[in-house]
Each structure stands twice: as structure tokens, then as C-alpha cells.
Image (cartoon, rainbow, N blue to C red; front, side, top):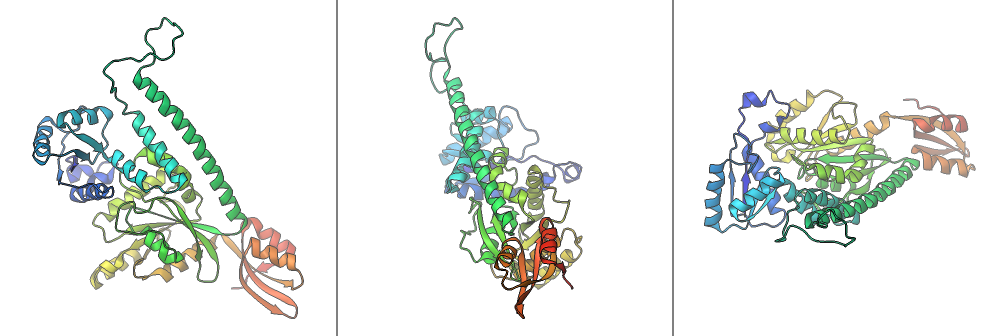
Length: 436
């Protein structure tokens, strides 16, 4: 197979005036990413080339001369599959397949193929199948030699019966409806789980970031888990939650989500919304960046774009902490430069330099997570009779116990509670604000 990068020619001065800043992404890096996507499904790559496009052609995306040039390459290498690193319309895909006499897969189809292979849980499989069917429905083509197929026979005068395309579209529509209903059940189950975590006062910290930024490695480092981590695009797909121990004994739930990517298909954003709701409900969001990647700034914009699609404004509030991962790849001067850049960041959007692989910077990151989680909670001091087992049990279930000491038959306790439970603790246990 070959990978083709049909990237628009845009002068830098013109690009900076456009809303979509992704046009500034380095074309070599884009092609390398497309090759990585192809390798993620074990495809043998014979060649990879950039095909500059001055204007997108409605019929074939590429110009006529470029199509003929690539035809020669396909013939010379006996190519069976061409991956186009762009979103093709059904007509463009069909016309290119006819011109090249080979199968053509666009970026969306390739990513769907990867997701189809990586989804291990029932939930992930449902979401991938839904996205794939929505994609496939627009690409139905007639494969029979005749134009019609009679279905039923009530003798209506309206002409022939249901055509093959209509039948396929109807069957796909019915399957989509069933999948959507099953995913609604998944959403309801996840909602119950979140409500359960809210009753037990565990806060949620969600990891987001560009694929292969090191989220799973950081997840394993923070939780001592064994989630698959590999130098591969979309190495992990199914969401995972584990307990996260905070420096002063508290706990939170850490959620590892699917990695984002530039031009993430809208079908996948919609289908994986049930999974990504963990991000919507998270108290703190860790945006993990591969700071050593040459396109790290463009990757950051791509992640911010997906977050906005989910209804999260990256520039509003203080929920997001940026984690600049893979600093072990820099020398002393490079690290000093990163530290200077980090120091100049606004306080509402701080960043933390870490190496998830080596464990460097993890303690500072955990302290920042704990501080952010504590910012919306109240710390109280109280004294409770040691014989009040029900009251002590209630405090352990509904608050975060920071300190507990027995003196003269009474427990002196320091607890941290949500604002929703603050009045209950104050009134029931005569609690007072913690003296700093």
C-alpha cells in the first residue's frame, strides 16, 4: 500500500489570518502521523508521498495530472490499497478507486479501522460500530447488475419495489437505532456509577491528550496500574478508571480516555460521547502533551478543538492542568528553556514538566492535583465521642478524613467536605473551620 498526503498549499502569511490554525502543521509531520496510523493496523507500506494541492477538486480531490502521476506509481509497485490522509466524499473515493483500479481509504475510514481492532469491551465495540455504520451509510454503492429488486408484492402501482441501496440503507438505519438505544443504556449505567462515586466522596481526574502523548504511561505511574502503554497511535482505546492516592492520604478516581488526533472524525466524537462524559464530569482535567514532539503546539490546538466539541472551554475556569510529558528527551539547556516558558504561564493555566517514563515531576503534579481538588472543598475541625460509631462511619463515608486522633474518649478529627455537605457536618458535629 501507499500513503498519500494531499495537503493544501497555504502560504504562512495567509494561514495566520485563518481561523483553522491546523494549516500551519508541518506537512512532513502530518505524513509521518498518517504512516503511523497505517502501521497501527499492520499494513505494509511500499511508499509515502506528499501531493501538494492548490485547489480541492470536487470529483477526485486531486488534480488530473496528480491522479495520473499516482496511477503510474500504483502500477509500478502493484499497489492494492491507497490511504489518502484527508476526508474524501463518497464520490471522490469512488472516482479515485476507478482511476487507480485499487481500494482507496481516507483518513476517517483508517481511524475507524484502527478503532474497530482496538475496542475490547462491549461498550467500545458498540461505539465503534455505530461510528462505522454512520460512515458506511453515506458510501453505499450499487453492486448488483440490475437497478431494482422486488420486495413483497401487494400489487401497488408505484413501480418497482425496494432497490438494493434502499434496502441496505434501511437495514443500516435499523441497526443504528438499536446501537443508539444500547449506548443510551451504557450512558445510564455510567451515570449511576458517577452518582455512586459522588455519594462516596471521590473526585474524578481525567486524562486527555493527543494520541501517543504518554497518557497511559502517566496513568500507570500515578496509579501503579498495568494499562497497555506502547509507542503506537491509539495503543489503548477502552476507558479505564483506577484509584489515585493523593499526597496527604486522600483519594480520587483517575480516568484514562481515548487519545485525540487532528481531524478526529465527527462520527467518533459523537459515538464516544458516552465514554467522554467522564471528562465532562471530571473535577480536574490533565491535558497530557508530548512536549518533545515537533508539532506539540498544533497537537494542543487539536485537543482544545475536541474539548470545545464536548462543551468544555479550555480557556475558561481552572479545571485544566497541562502536563508537559517526555522532558527526559531534552538536554539541560532544553529543560531550562521549558522551565522558563512554564514560569511565564498564566496562573489559571499552569503546566507541569514530567517524565511519566522516569517518574520525574510526579510529586509536584500530585500536589497540584490535590490542591485543585481541595480548592472547592471546605476543611473542618470537630470532636466526636468515640462511642458514636454511626457518626464516625458517616464521616468516613461522606467526607475525606485528613486527621483523626483519640484524646480522653473523643476523636479529634479534621475532615474535608463538599460544599453540599458542609452545613450537615457543621450542624451535626459542631464543626468549625480548620485553623491553618
